[in-house]
Length: 157
View (tube, rainbow, N blue to C red):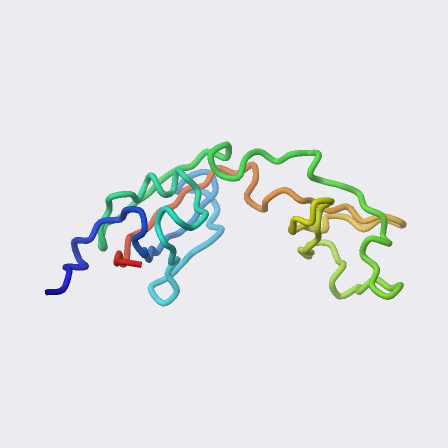
C-alpha cells in the first residue's frame, strides 16, 4: 500500500518543494527572487537552515496549498550593521603580488575568512587608493521579506 502523497502534511523530516515569489516589504514591494515549477525551492523541513518564520508559515500544509508570510527584518536576516562594513588594505586581496581586477570590482562578492577561519561573503562597495571597502552584511539584511507561494510537493525524505 502506497502513502497518499497528496495529503501528506509538512512536518519535521519531510522533503518539501515550494514555488514562491519573494518581495521586499510586502506584496507591492520589489521582487527579489522567484522560483518556478521547473525549479522549485527544495529542502528537508526542520533540518535545513531556513528562516524560522518561513517554516512556521508552511508547517502542516499539504501539496497544492498556498501560503504567504511577511517576515520582519529582525526575524529574517537582522538589521544592517555598520560594523560589518570594513575597510581592508589592498594587500589583503593580492594573489602573487597582484590584484585580479576582473574579480575585485565594486558590486562583486568575494569569499573571505575571518580570524577563526569561518567563511564570509563580502560585497565590494568601494575601491580606494590603498584600501577596499567590503560589506559583510547579509544581502537581505535590513529588509522585511514577503513570501507568496504554493506548496508543490511533500514526501518522506
